[in-house]
Image 1: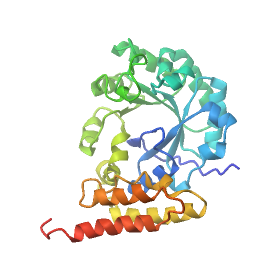
Image 2: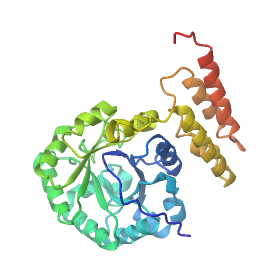
Image 3: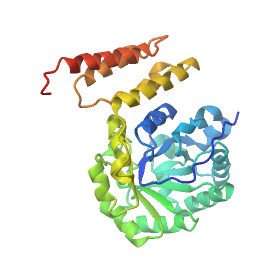
Image 4: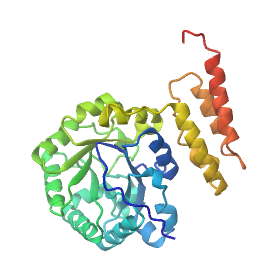
Length: 339
C-alpha cells in the first residue's frame, strides 16, 4: 500500500547525510533525525529494477519524522527512472537523486553508478525524463572523474552536458573512481581527494548548487569547505561518530539551536524501538546504528558490547538498551570527580 507523506518543500542541502548501502536505512535515518533537524537525509541506493519489480513497500517506506529525506536511485534507462521518480513523489520524498558515483563491479555490470560518467548525454536524458515525471527536485551524485578522465575539463564537460537537463544540484564526491583494478573499499581512499576541483566547479557554474562529499570528518572542516561550495555531505564519519550530528544545527544553521543530549536522544530512540518491536522488527536491525553514540566517552565500550552481544538474540527487547545504559552509568559513576 502507498503510505505517502507530504513532500518537504522547504529544506536545505547545506549539510547532508550520504546515501550508504547497508547503513542509511529507515532506522538509521530516524536515529539521525533525533540528532539534527536540518540535515538532509538520503536513503540507501535502490535500483530501478528493485522498485519496479520488487517489494516497493520495503524499499520506500519511511517515517514522516525522517523528513526531509531524499531517495537515491540507480539506473540508466530514462523510462524506468521516470517511473521511479513517480514512485518517489507518490511516497512523499523531498528529492530523488541519481547515483553516478558508485564504483562497484556489481552496479557497473548493470550500467549503474560511476560508469555513467562516461555517458553524459545519456545521464542528461535520464534526468530530463525524471524531471518531467514528477514535481520534486531531481539531483545527481557523481565523482570528479573516472579512470583516465582525470582533468578538470572532463568534469566540467560532464556537468555542463548534464545541466542541459535542467538539473540544478550536483553532489560531487571529490575523489576519482577507478573502475578497473580497485575494489569499492580501495576507492574510498585512492586516489586522493581534490576539494579544490569541486570549488572550481562552483566558481565556473555559480548558477548551480554544488555539494561536496568525501572524507569530511569535522564541522570545522565543513565550515571551511562551505566558503567555496553550497553544501557538504558526510557519510562514514557520522555513522561511526553519530553525535557529530548533534552540533550541526547550531554550527551550520542556527546559532541559537539547542544541542540534543545523548540521554534525550536515547530516550526517544528507545520509544521508537518499542513501537517497531511491536510491529515485528528485530532489535538488532535498529540498534546496530547507535553503537557509536558514546564514542570517546568512558563506558562506550561496555555500551557497545552489551548491545552487540544481546540485541541479535531471539526475543531481545528494550531491556538490552536499558542494560547498556546501566553499564554506561556504572562506568561513569566509578570515575573520580575530576574526570
